[in-house]
Amino acid sequence: MKKEAAGMQLYQDMLYLPHPVSQKHAAMPRRDRAAQFSPFAALTGYDAAIAESRRRTYAPIELTEDRAMLLNQCLHEIMEHLPEKPSVTVIYFLPDLKKSGGAYMTAYGIVRKVDVYHRVLTLDGYREIPLDSIWSIQIEKESVFPR
Image (cartoon, rainbow, N blue to C red; front, side, top):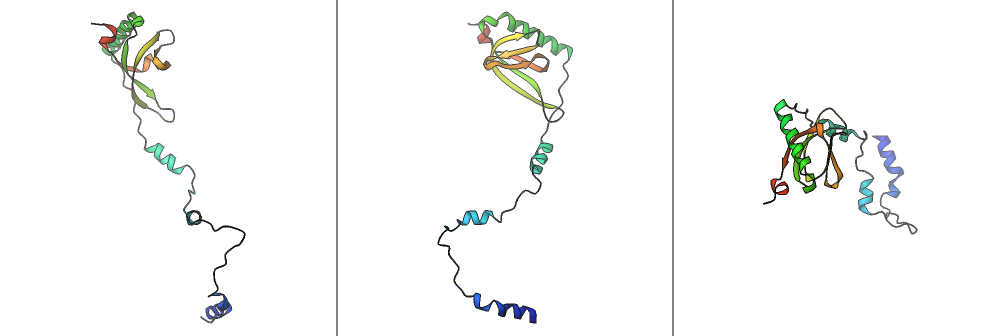
């Protein structure tokens, strides 16, 4: 207690002095002053790692023989009508680059090319979809068979 009282007496003359204001430097805005005391991320990337582990991926569904035959017939129909620029809706499996599994995506567009050698379906905008990842193809009949 005596030490505390002695400390107060040492600084008693400074307690009621006016706050010093610099003549050379402008006052720091309150927002910047508050930012000095805001919390920081001690573990850089930890939040991103948690979000990544929470993100769901799915295993690809195996094609049955019947479904593979239907897809094959659909691709042949598209190749026959390629000069007529058929519009299609394609559902395909896109593997995840960071972890096992992936997601099913839907693409809409006009077919530019079916490359059987490289096993790729190319839509307008040069979006390439691997033939082995396709789950379904729906041809817009009005684009192939005009009325």
